[in-house]
Length: 181
Length: 389
Image (cartoon, rainbow over all chains, first blue to last red; front, side, top):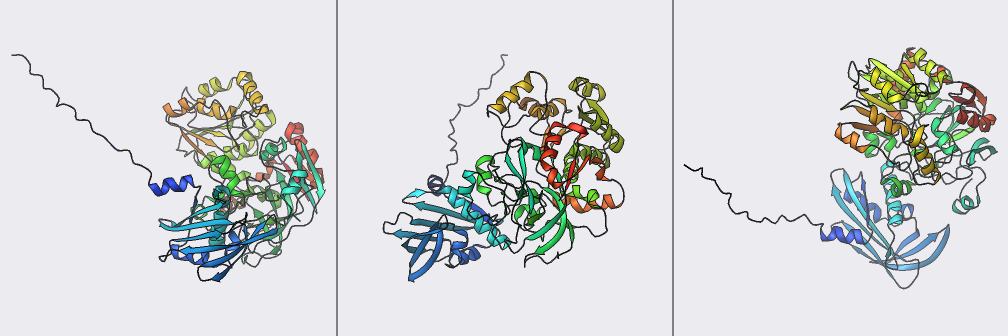
């Protein structure tokens, strides 16, 4: 008797969908949002970011922020130790405390749009920040300022070398490090 | 005050600079009583580490007397004698809490720079480029110590500086290198480089249960020391071909663990040595990974490569095929000095080790420029220079 060859059932093509990045994540990548995990609750982070006297401590481009009207703030920037022109920004907050956006109004070149998000995570809060000047995102400044926020929140101080001694600087060094002793 | 300042390749100078002051609440200012030149300072001296700038004060191995503390420092007071760990750590972040203090998330003000080069940033380090924080170092009369409530180890029993100074870096670095080997009883550990870290790695490997330690170098004086003080067997790679010799000594299997205590400026003969020097000169690779390659080639199947020597950038022709196919494990990192200081101090107090045997030169701080040159050229059996401000 001839051996019966069992035929495999016709293969059904299976389309496995590769997981797609969420639309929100894609947008964050395109807009150079940066994120950091901070050992604090989202509520605590939101509170600090809502304290306008506190913000210039870690937002390196801001000299001062004042509330002018409900929902409006006036910002003065700082660049290379000197104050820049000021700008007004509309403040939009999430009532649940997950986000704050400051949208500049008017054409001041230094005006910076700030968007911050607070998401609870296993080890604290993921704080995401997007900084834009004339619609151009600045990811490097965003991560620098996020580090400053994390340092301040977790250690009570912001790591610095400003004011420490140094030997004679070269021409480049003199330009970059004005604040040295 | 006087400080050792970097000014370019093979150019360090003694300069008069202002004394440091408290900048943050958790700072202390320490009057340096003894400091040392580290092998990794030679990478700066050879200008192989990016983001070092003219005028930077060098030095990350130092100890001294506290002269001032910020309002946030309650565990130290003026007059305390302290050894300061070379990585700066906040003690509170995710990594510090796990004991990975050389990865502190909060001590590097230039973390963004390191992130651009390495993906993520490690901790800030004293006197070791702006990439690692740009902190003024301890080859000076005074130094500012950030997070002084976390790092400095008090020395209260009158042990001389020379016996405890190396708790700041090289003794814990040697220990961690050996610990990373995951030594089981009966293991053979090979150590590339018999500089101070290699010496202490060999000593530590025995303490952690190695049956044999094979130490590798080309300088006879260093090989003698590692035999006399640590009990290691030795190979002088200028007298015998290294890999066959190691194979012969380990019955064809290779050492169970290989420690790279050399890093980015390995001396290598032959075509590969020329290849690396040429590429480094053309800035096509930053590091000369001759030792890393050898450790991988030599290591026994399923063995461990422990990298203690410093690397900075990118390196070519690392034999990943050997690494992968033979189940090798690589462990590395800047030393989490904080977690090793106290247990190692206890070993020194018990007399298990007098680390001062490695000191070959004792000089005043003003002699630092000559000392760097002597150390670079390994003249006069130079193994370790300590400087007295």
